[in-house]
Image (cartoon, rainbow, N blue to C red; front, top):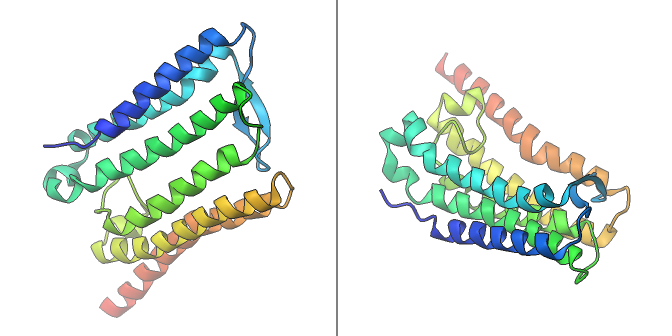
Length: 220
């Protein structure tokens, strides 16, 4: 079965090369930002080499899991033609967006750009907008998508929930790009994350449950 993961593999190799290059350029004892709070401010650091290699390592883990998906997913094996095109697209989206985040961090370390919450929020916004675009095409599975007991038990529930989820993800993605660019590091960004969590996680899950209850009543 073809797997269109050459692009993702290339990005990981570029990340690895950039990380190694930066490791030899930066002095020993350099601390690498590794965690951001809700305002997009750095509140955690790692030692130089772990901090530089964590992004390519994380992307390599994503790629590995997606390559293993055909072997560990029963639903994938039952209908591989439904997954062949969409799963590589999801993989490329995930790895591309974390690559952008990694690139932004490296540019900050080089002094080319200033530290900003956009280094985190811009790639995340792009990530969720693109995932929203492909979400309606996702086949039912246990690994990717809005996986609640109700979506996994009903093909109709899965399809309708992911149509709603597509809208929620795209709206959240736009908010994650626009609002931090306007507010910068203001505390009001915390409210954005509360909206984000509701749109992306809570509302689609609640919607899938309500669909389940509605369908159950109709069956009775």
